[in-house]
Length: 360
Ligand SMILES: NC(=O)c1ccc[n+]([C@@H]2O[C@H](COP(=O)([O-])OP(=O)(O)OC[C@H]3O[C@@H](n4cnc5c(N)ncnc54)[C@H](OP(=O)(O)O)[C@@H]3O)[C@@H](O)[C@H]2O)c1
Image (cartoon, rainbow, N blue to C red; front, side, top):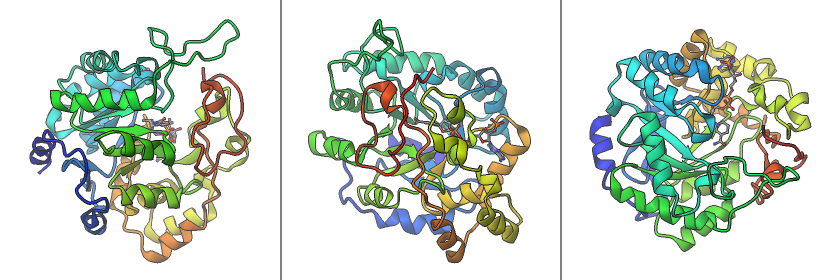
């Protein structure tokens, strides 16, 4: 089924004929509770409900990717800036799982957003990943850095130097890659609603995916509804909230990253977990998938990988979903706006408390 879907995806549908696609929501209820659950993209392709994050632990990623695929994951999320693409490529080979059975997503980094650099940047990723194509290519942020070899180009005072082109220029260049067969779908990450509206208004291609921070403490209900209404599938990054220690260590670490207890200690998630014989982490992941979104938890630990995989089998009932909706505190942990010299998420929830400081 997946192979057929991927073949269909090469003839990418650029703009959904209707913005709202009811087939998406009806499919969710029937398929989101198996390890192989898939959602539909506006390209006609499918995307797994559950994916594997690869940010951090570069040395462990080759084995982690191989092990997660052998265990049953079928989507890998990576990015140029994570510097793990080579390990991811080797991990896919090592797993023995055929390339065409894996949904592979990567992200262009901000110093290659000049429209004349986009095709070469993708080629770089394909070479590093050792694959002829990716299933999804994302623009990592709507911020354009100065073009050149330096991923974080800074002036003498350490401030980021921005580029002269816009994310719309980058998007048009990414759109033309759809004709090459090297990317099967394109999408964005960390965009505001207004920025996505600009892409819809000013270009011919509606993003297939928005990858954004969503977890029980940052539910973004109105934005999620808006995205679904426009046929844009949501992939939740940091689906476990502030459990990634990066959010407590990075230079712009927000106070809430330190004061918010991890999901594993949340009484309500523990209670729902007890009801299903599962952990709070599994309930948080199931909440995302049962809401019609994909989730991409990161782990390099075998028992966690197995646990996260089993989360795809949990069918939460309406009462569970209603109770989890009360956990929304609009807590956004990922906000490098000050470092990037660009107000990210400007029309979205959770932008209070942004801190200055360098990402690395
Ligand atoms: N587009 C973007 O800007 C963006 C931003 C952030 C992340 N991402 C993507 O999203 C992925 C996931 O986000 P994330 O890495 O920030 O955080 P996350 O997946 O929400 O949380 C990862 C943390 O949770 C722990 N963990 C995982 N499974 C667990 C389990 N079953 N029980 C207990 N602890 C568990 C991990 O531990 P161990 O490390 O010990 O295994 C790690 O510390 C990334 O890897 C990346 O691919 C994208």
